[in-house]
Image 1 (tube, protein in one colour):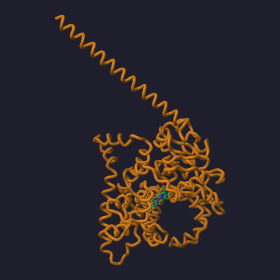
Image 2 (cartoon, helix red, strand yellow):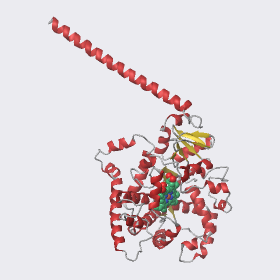
Image 3 (cartoon, rainbow, N blue to C red):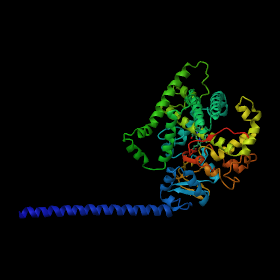
Image 4 (tube, helix red, strand yellow):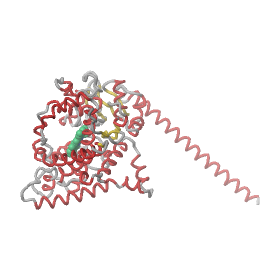
Amino acid sequence: MEVLNRSHALINSRILKGNLNLKNIFIFSVGIYVIYVLLYFTYQLFFSPLAKVPGPWYCAISRFWLAKASLAGRRIFAVHELHLKYGQYVRIAPNEVSISEIESVKKIHSSQNNFSKPEWYGVVANGVKSAFAIVDCEVHKARRKAYGSVYSNTNISLLEPVIRRHTNVCIQKIKRDLKHGPVDILRWFRFLAADIIAELCYGNDMEMLSKEAVNPIVEDLTTLLTIGGVRAEIPGLSLLEYLIGFIPHPTIKTITSCSQRIFDYSDKVLCDFQHKIQKDSSNCYAPYFFTRLVKNMDNPTEKNKLTFEELRHESTANLIAGSDTISTTATYAIWAILTHPTVREKLERELEDLGEEITDAKLNQLPYLKLVLKETLRLYGAGPGGMPRVVPPGGWRLGPFYFPGGTGVSSQGYTQHREIIVFEDPYEFIPERWANPTKEMEAHMMPWGGSSRDESMEFANYFNIKPSGNLCEVQRRTLS
Ligand code: HEM
């Protein structure tokens, strides 16, 4: 018995010792972690090459603030407010600086200077590896070359009949509905833009105008970009999404499988298009965006050609880039015109003599319309957010600061377009300002890259912008 008791006591003391050891290890690990975090914060705040760049201390030590703003759909406003407070160079994250000084912005976006896109784009694009998300500058150039001149004005003018056909249908349907009450033009412009871009890509629209309903693929495209925009700011969200994917809930399944559905759709339309082109003896599909790409796929002498896998990525990217962007900006254009009676009157007077048939050539002759559209793009271009780039190896001096290679530098159109020393009353919709623009005004306009009081029309910003009410109702004028 004595022996037994002794051995019990021995075992207990060993367990206790073991516990103590575990406890010590835990305390030691926490201590090391705290010291590491403190050293990291101290380095970022005082010794990092970016320590001299103005900005709030919390941005210098973590991306949490940026992630929070992105999650709330307020990234561009939050960064803009920092610019107003701290100036043209602001440190918005430990390794990222937002720049609004135009000379530096031009340097960052000049293709000669090889500031590459960061992996951020790949995350935003949710694995869609198109020209939009390609990081390597040379690979990106080759990808753009593969398209040839499909996006040129000359080529687009060949496709004008397609654009006009859809636009006429859209206008007739809006007019029809206006007889019965208010019409949500954002909804109609979504139908219009998606039908046009799909047909310009591969000769088949999305049947949204004809069916008067959103094609589920377009919903998927919007979901993909919205989630991507948030995911890119929140490290670890991908893992969370992966785990959530195991929950057998229909809504979750719909969201997590949206990129697969988009790829399936792209595969189908590309195959159909390939068959159409093969039978097209009159070459009538020549100007369509994907004709050259599809034909070159099997061309052994073509240097810049894409595989079918690459084509499905480009297809998805074109649908994303060319649908909600156009519909959002067009909606804001109409809304801005309708909420500014003098602009509306001037424009109506200019449009009076246009006649029944509206062509691009006729519209190009309308000076006031051009001013209105330019002002719309200044205030309501659909991609006003920070477009990040990475400083090439060797580093760069931009303005008063030196940035080592690998530093993230971004510039956002939202801030450039509202630079108070360049634009008088920068938040006001004044098309007339473009009648005699200064050189600085032109230089600051970057709607393609590189306010309002009505709450539902305030931007929600998840990569692209859109009215936060997700609608824009207009109604017929009652003439007194
Ligand atoms: C109002 C309409 C539009 C706006 C405001 C807009 C804005 C932008 C912006 C700001 C970027 C630059 C992204 C960056 O530098 O990181 C971009 C890129 C792009 N946009 Fe648009 N866009 C519009 C319409 C379109 C349309 C109709 C297409 C046609 C397919 C299109 C295709 C693209 C493509 C392919 C890229 C990626 C270019 C590359 O990196 O090589 N966009 N767009």
